Image (cartoon, rainbow, N blue to C red):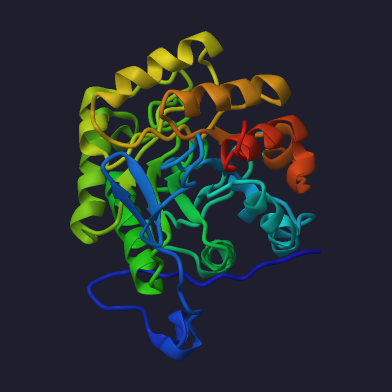
Length: 337
């Protein structure tokens, strides 16, 4: 039987005790920074993918269940699952991935009823969950990769007892990122915030998302903050204006409509980053190509391989056709081609 015991981390007016965070000399050396220059992404002060068709973009893969747990089950080993992802993570990076999407409440594991949340009912944070999240963030840091870190996921926001707890959760997440010194993290307030699986209105309403984005920004003005929309590839004007970068999803968007969706979002003068599309094979490769050719970053979600149990992480073997396209878009073409 697998059991986990977890204390709670609550960020109030005081900083966490050294026993929780670890002494400064024990913290891993941070090497990776992320920034935006106009509509271009910079990693460590340099534009991404220089000289390629994907120059300035942030090509990404959704790995929200790399830190999965289910407190309603005792037959799943969360640490072994994280180990499996970390073992192959360098292969994704070598193929051209420059960001992974994770979430403090994970994602749909392929069955209902999971209890997978870094938050307690009052919005405080659970150290055992943060420990796994720290492992993946710090591994990304070492490999020069950005983390798109989500706070809330549909089916899991019910853990939070009220809207004040939701606000506290955002503040605590931002304070944790800052206290850890993570400079390779950007924040996604909620995954598909308008989804009917959310209970709290502050998450589901555009006005609520703007409030939470501004709350995160007040807590740490240097942290880049956004929130993601539904699979139709659109974002409400209020949300787009409040965000530092735009996170459409293309799950429900026809291939032929992707260029038009991107064109509408480009009017805000911010980076457009699809960070979820559940296509596979040739369709995923084509969606990726269309995104890049129209100036948007693309994000793959292999739900039946990486996100649904049993979680599998096999590098480019997850989807060879897609990763071949990704490599071609993010690699400098040789002379004569």
